[in-house]
Each structure stands twice: as structure tokens, then as C-alpha cells.
Image 1 (cartoon, rainbow, N blue to C red):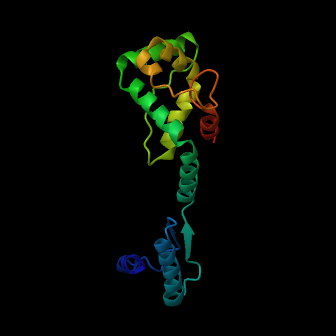
Image 2 (cartoon, rainbow, N blue to C red; image 1 turned 60 degrees about the horizontal axis):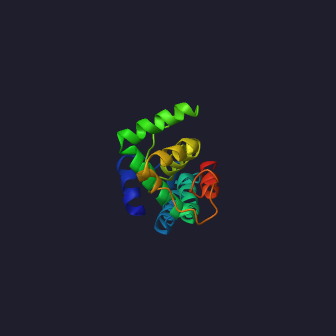
Image 3 (tube, one colour; image 1 turned 180 degrees about the vertical axis):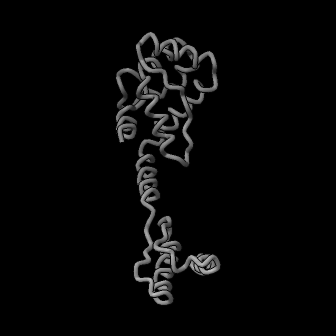
Length: 171
């Protein structure tokens, strides 16, 4: 890997202009960064070349690890939001209920499992429209059936375990 990166930098006359390299934290990439740093320090007397670990990647790994704790709740919310999002009737009813409750209507969206910020948006919308979603569940049996079971420590307003979801949504 370091050979390929070095070759490209030399090919485009960028080796002496490169100041740093930012990569994910996979062990092969860490070795690659160390090798490139040593090579540029030797060959180019570039003592300022550095290898940085990507902070976004570190944050993403930390959040994904924490999300595993609330995985079942996320799956339940994903099913619920998917049902609502894919139904014009449910979206319209949810919008009307939000108006009745003086809540801002937030278009339901489904998260993308590999992008934790989309999970955040999904949970945030659930939290902001919780009262309207509870009312929607009363009105529609198919929504009520998707509300998670009430066997854990749940919110008084809904069957969804809000404690870890609130922690994540307030992150």
C-alpha cells in the first residue's frame, strides 16, 4: 500500500509537497503511514511529514459500538418508520396529528445502517414526534402492531425503550 501511494506521489511530483496523510485506523494503514513517514523523512529530508488517524473514523467506530447496546430498539424503530414512510395515508395522518398537537412534522426517514448519523436523524424524529406517533398507533392497528413490546423499561407514552434512544438522540 505504501509503495503504491509513494509511486503516485512521485509520479505527479507531489512527494516533496505532501505534508500529511490521513487514513482510517486499520492496522495495515497504520503501518503504511509509518513507512511513508520514514521514507519521506529519509529521501526528502521532509521532517514535517505526518500520518494522522482520521478522527471521523474514530468517532464513527465509537458510536457504532455504543449503538450495538440499543440494537433491538433501533430495529423496532426502523420497522415502524419504514411502515409510516412507505404509506401516504400514514404520513398524512401523522402530519395531521402533528398539527393537532402543535408539533413540527418531520418526514419519517429510514436510517442507513452504515451511516450512524442517519440513525441519529431517525431517532431524533421519533423522539420529537412521540406524542403524534402514539396517537397514530391508536388510530392504526398496523402501526400499533409495530410498536415494540412493553416488557422492558419503557416510556410512559409509548412502548419504545426511550432511555437509550434519548441518550443517542441527544448525543
